[in-house]
Image (cartoon, rainbow, N blue to C red):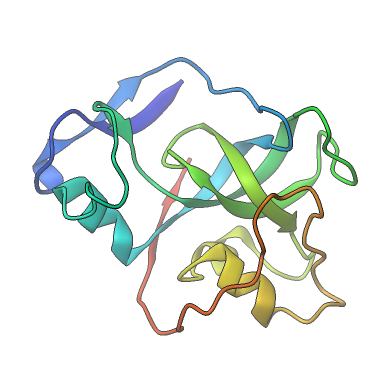
Length: 159
């Protein structure tokens, strides 16, 4: 599959679209066919190496933390989410054709992937959507609530 990766820390010039092995969902995770990936302000800080003390990475590494797409693989212990479900959530290396999410919620029918990728953090988005519109998964080992402030400008990658 194609994915955006970097083999050294630096500016945008270190990013490459490369062929990599498809990831697979582990316990309490889902894999999605990515339809839109959020481009968050933290991404450039990770790529530039500014976060390596807090978030050590083995290079080469993938980019992206947030994505929306369709579940195509469900890990052991996941309940309430099935192959074919449209979801949005957070994981790692989401600038790719497939990504594994550790935290996710069902995509409300009235919201598009474009809208959902605009959230500064998916966990913040879940707290802002009325409970009648989205139901966070109960499989996550972390809370879906966040104290992140809104206001960051985000972009998207469509695959």
